[in-house]
Image (cartoon, rainbow, N blue to C red; front, side, top):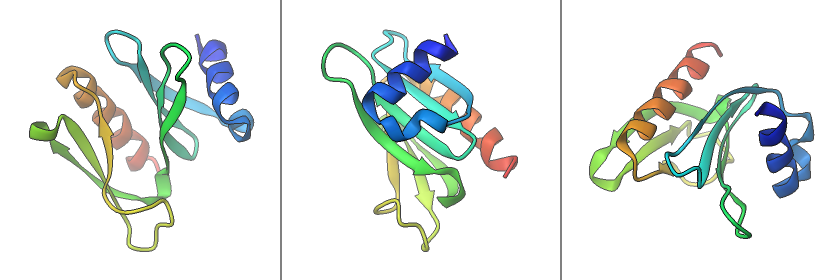
Length: 113
């Protein structure tokens, strides 16, 4: 499964070829996947012909996470020095259990930095 995921990521963004995968979580209908690598958090729309990178945020730029249940999202609050875009970046997925698992996966990765 890691090889298939890596192939998907590289097909969307060839610069992800050297990425070291740490963990991933698919949403229940397998239309999107959240990925933690050795240096990045990625959220990929993986269904059909519309495959695209929804989020690409360096782990070192994430200051803390904030669940936003009303918005069906997890806010990735970034350090002011981040060049990853406006803060917060939002990880959105409708399934609450997937949001919780991804937040937990991200917290583990951030604690390891």
